[in-house]
Length: 117
Ligand code: FAD
Image 1: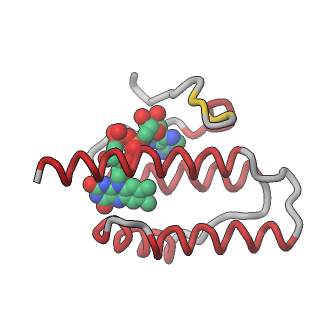
Image 2 (image 1 turned 135 degrees about the vertical axis):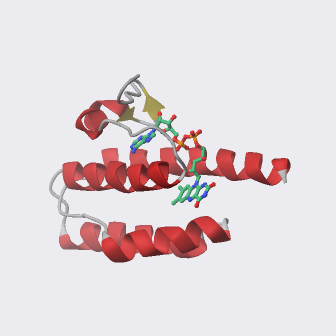
Image 3 (image 1 turned 180 degrees about the horizontal axis):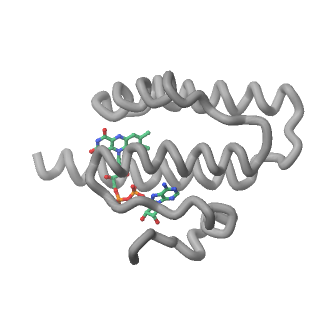
């Protein structure tokens, strides 16, 4: 059980990093094709995510909050917001989304700002 929890947490950290970094590097002015690519990516990410409980919950999040693909900042803010929904469910601290643009750059978390920290 502990092993499963550790694997789930490591998978989650890696997955969020890929997602947030992808949004941070998404074009400022995406083409229609790029917008569709990001939308498909997020939906397939949810569908194939290798933690059943997580995928199931994330599916309800996507239904309520479809991916925002109009620009880099819209995608990054959306990613931060849905991560905060998962944080809330897991009783983790809320991340301050105002700083999301500075937080992820080429996969390196430079300044991870957490409200109240
Ligand atoms: P994480 O939540 O993994 O965050 C990693 C780092 O990202 C943090 O240290 C911080 O620097 C930064 N960060 C935190 N919040 C934000 C934010 N809002 N925006 C940007 N950066 C932020 N686990 C479960 O047990 N049950 C689930 O149902 C579940 N569902 C998940 C669904 C998805 C789609 C994903 C990707 C993961 C899910 N997880 C779930 C895993 C869970 O979200 C965490 O990844 C895991 O618990 C490890 O948490 P952590 O405290 O190390 O930080």
